Image (cartoon, rainbow, N blue to C red; front, side, top):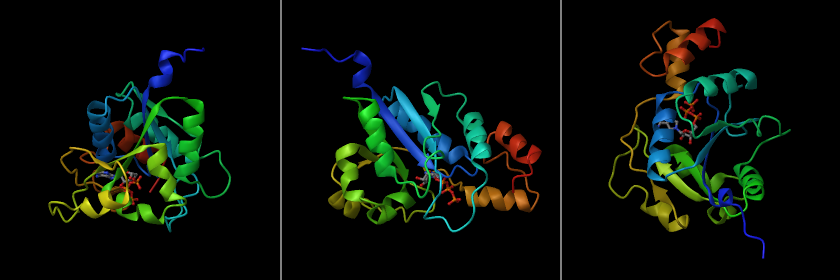
Length: 203
Ligand code: ATP
């Protein structure tokens, strides 16, 4: 019998998003997930063609570079450009299938913010997701805050786990708005990211 390598039993987080730009809300979610789920690795996966976003995203190379800067202090993080290399619309289910194949025996954790959690039933082949990964949700500051807000979702999504994270009132939309109106970005993004945005005139 072949004994699988110890590395096969790793706990791997998967956190996808436009990351346009990556901000302190994303970072807080990553830190929380690494600690609470005891992740060995966390793949930060900038989306390729974001079929659900109406605006054109910043160039992939910029979003990769900003993600490298934003998560630089977390040794578990791998900034993973696989979706950027995929032609056409990219779907999380395909990414999870790939990661499962690459990491036999590993437990995958799919990290999503609350807004995306509520949109989950609209995702491509979403019914397959709970079998591929434990879906972990973080509350967002603009949520209703009602106790039991995830109960309906929990009934729909087997194994849905809620991360214990104080909501961080930040969105990439807000940061892009601040950039276009010459307001400081530093309370909402790391200084390295703010400098990158400025140097490359991103928004
Ligand atoms: P935009 O404002 O452009 O829609 P965003 O701030 O929601 O962007 P995304 O890159 O689209 O950022 O989000 C990637 C993932 O991070 C999503 O699952 C989203 O729900 C989650 N997320 C974003 N901001 C926060 C936050 N402040 N707290 C918790 N989760 C967040």
